[in-house]
Image (cartoon, rainbow, N blue to C red):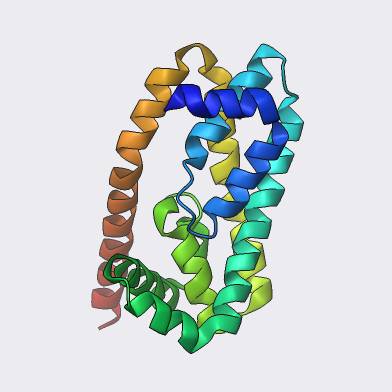
Length: 196
């Protein structure tokens, strides 16, 4: 799998990096982590410029999140009905709605990097919930800075071990999401018990 995305980045460079970052934020199943790791590796080799890789991935991710937010805002009940017909997506969207309802801005922030697989669904849910657009933008840009910088810099510093790194990141992404959600829920329950 790494070789395929490595080849795409080798051929198309920043275009592939930007497109994958954008579309992954709209729940299109693109393994953006592999593309960003590859972009970092090519920057380490001198074939791409590091700041350009970071800038393109960051701007594309923010644009993707904003598109998802606006689709959620405009889609409303249509989006709910469409997702309800697909049980797996409906479950992800329901979880995202809980995150937005319970955590608000902090939920948006963590969904971009600590719970990245839920990120696109949080974008839709925040829009559908009529979340404040400026708060969404601020917390989204802060979170995307961590997500993009983390993946690109991992690829940059571990370019010689890209295959092993890609496998490790792929295997551990959902585990990191689950751990983050458990920690967030624990914090919330602890706070609620102290207030009660």
